[in-house]
Amino acid sequence: MHLVLVDGAKYKDMIAARMKRDNGSGAWMVHKDCDREYAEQVTAEEKAVTLSADGKPAAKWMLKSSHAANHYLDAEVYAAAAADILNVRSLGLEAPHRSLPDLAAYDDRHNTRYPHPEVPIYDDPL
Figure: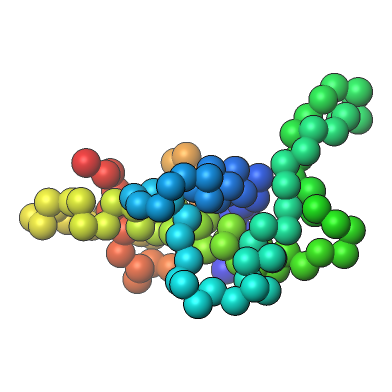
């Protein structure tokens, strides 16, 4: 088992930016029959400016109300992180003749191993 640290704020920023886009490529879109609970939970947080411990302003993701459930937002954050770990954004963009890297090799950027050596990913997007 390998520990992967996820910067939740980074992914929440990405999700929020995609929600603000018009429908189309790169936009956050849901099925027309998306239930209200999902919609409320995935939008249960907002980015607010607060004072850090040293008194400086800092942006932080916070619940909109004190007891709001945000489990679906958390699930979307971890799904996006998993997609990045597996390099899903570049699937289908690689030339068919290119070989896949050895996933058991260390990832130099994070000094960690990919979570599962049998899951194919591409080493560099075009």
